[in-house]
Amino acid sequence: MSDTVDIRQLLIAWPYNADDNVRLDHGKDGREIMQVRLPLGIEQYELDGRPDGLQPHGYGSTFDYQLSRQTASIGVFSIPSEECSELFSESMLYYYRYINLFKLKDWARTIRDTQRNLQLFDFVHRHAQNVDDQNYLEQWRPYVMRMCACARAMGALESGQFDTALKIIGEASIEIQTLPENEEVTYAFERERSLNALKTFARQIERSKPISKLDQLEKRLLRAIAAQEFEKAAVLRDQIRALGKVTSPNPSDNKPSAQS
Image (cartoon, rainbow, N blue to C red):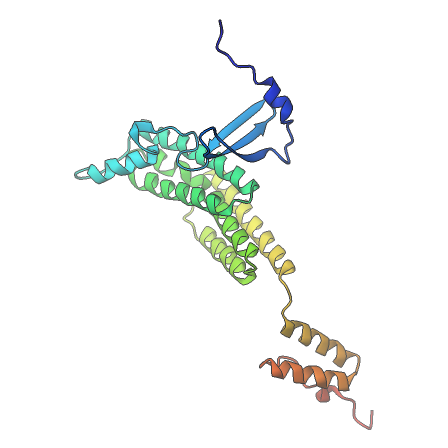
């Protein structure tokens, strides 16, 4: 008798919708898990530790195992190609998790997983035995940097920190622009795409940024001057001065003379 489980009823109960295919749930032991509905099935992710819940080499992740090897090593530490392959495969698991966490607007865990992968990229780049292995992950560095910055900026925006969000995006753009050159086609594509995406995001933040009381007064002052409503402009000027800043011209400067 086969032990295969038919999951058709599970799939029927959760129809596939590409725009709404990620959810949080709880396992039988109460732990929080993430499930992703695919066209032909359901994936399940652990939210903490390695996404598949495995403990390779008896450690929380292959990366943790390699870090322990480095700590215990005497002399030059290096990672052979077959062990680099394990790290590459593991980084994909974290990638799949953080793109779905981003969909859920779980910014803290998205930041955690993207920063973790960037640390792995650094580790492999420094310690892989083979030059090709050293550079393999670098082609995706701009993309991961962008995702990390966007998650950080979104967290700031949710707290109403528009200037902080803009600063995060600006700093990430500079960091990506100043990355070392790389001959990989994928790297050039991801670098350009990431810079364009960050530029677009910054414009969106600027457009949605609330206008301060001072900015509102200054705009009203300029309109009053243009309409030659000088008494109204004088009142607005005094209100601006009360806020401790005057950036617009004195309305009397533009007042027409008796000879005009």
